[in-house]
Length: 384
Image: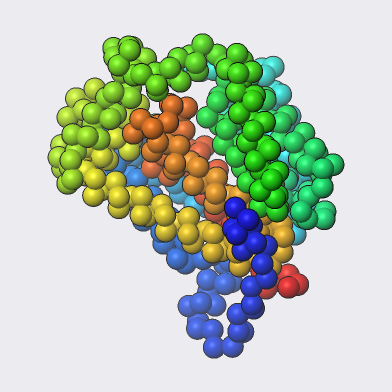
């Protein structure tokens, strides 16, 4: 972590201004990174292909998802034009609005699938305010720490803990354990990249381990059952263990090359639950096999590596902290989803980024990449 922290806090050399081709000039004017954009577009197209199979060849589902992707790409393009200095000024009000909306969810939010997570403007929009906090949290902490001495002092860490704890608790009460963990990770990554020593990190890990019994006591019954099912899914194969048994069966039955696109049995015969959302990677594993899954993971790896490179190229502390947090949180998305579907992590309801069906998460993720491109695209406007 210290090595990555030093890299993200380093000062890259300025690229020469002369000899820039016309094509490169166009990308610079719109503040987009062509390589990251290309990788994201390939991932989006692959996601639509997998979704078509996972949804039972329902073209209307693919069209709806494609429309959401267009909105998400437009959001990414707009945010890429916003200078980092403007993002720093907007950080406190965005964070405050996000917290107020989470309080509104607690008071008047809509219920769905046993959870109170949504706000609705009748006839206009229905959305999850917790998704906003995935960006508002690292934005606020990066803005706060960029104005202070680094590595952060104890009083700064206590302030970060307060800013982080309030929305995480509100989201966990909805209940939405998966999103609360992602929001917590987004904030923790900012603090870690600010330069914490390994001694302090070990202290935090020991404290977290000591708090596990208290966390277990405060979990909902269904959340405890998910952990127990993870440890022994065969204890209730027709109940709580059904999801993970079917997903691992689907992945295992795909073998090396898979059964062929649209030819999966676990997914097409509807044995696999939530196959177009949380468990969509099991559809990919069954139909395209180990090779298909490795290609997808390679695509994710290239996106993550490109994102880290853009973060390291930032010319200011705010950009390095925020960009690093955004791309590392994206990695957590991928790791948790693939881990829970393959049976090495408990099921926590985290979708596969930019592949699983869903609109709010896609907009949030591509908005984050838009901010990352803005940090890189506006770096020449900042002092070294």
